[in-house]
Length: 335
Image (cartoon, rainbow, N blue to C red; front, side, top):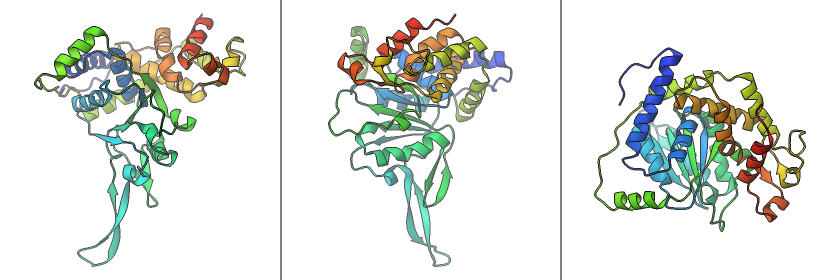
């Protein structure tokens, strides 16, 4: 684990974070092949103190990626396999009645559930009913959970990485829009290339190799998370980000007339906030202490795709939210 002191000046901090990013990628490569974009978005979510929803078919190493990252960052991680019979108490924890050995009196003691961790992998989150899905809402929004009338704070950093299978819909419960909006990014995971898949097969069918080494500790991660909001953003960059989000709303004047029939509901203000905050994290990860227009463009899809609801016409014509965002980016000039 890195032992050098955390830099205090902005310039030194940016260089330090960029160096840490490179070391994290080097250690991840011992277990993970490819998925460079996914890894970058995962780090952006972590350092921006946001949650991420991973959408991809089974077998793309989502669980392996997140557990490996947790070990590299010296963070505690838990995995919850969401199923139709999962109850909120299975996630949050529950109170049990016990006898005080000294006084002999009965008392309730809270037993924490798997939500009490730093990185929570919510596997196939859409396989459990909305009542259980909602058990994550307070923790994602406030970093705390309430059980038995008492509020329990979660140790920071606390990040939820949820996964969802896009091709299997039987026995699933779509995530409510209010909960989708709590995810900073929705990360699409695609199949590896031929070269990458050959390397994956070689790696996973051979004896276990060298274990990844820790790179950062909890205090260092918290320091990066505190530094991200301080990254400056020029007024015209903020205006461009907000304009992009407003252009996804069919009732807004910025929305292209040709797109309005294809969007039922656009992204709300949290979409603008998420886009700018994620852009700040991307800038510092790339060794820059200022957000550029390119950061906004690159993150438009991950930050907005889960906040846009296509109309029935869009679904009938096979237009995805990514295609709609592409049209907005093509139409809206940053100048």
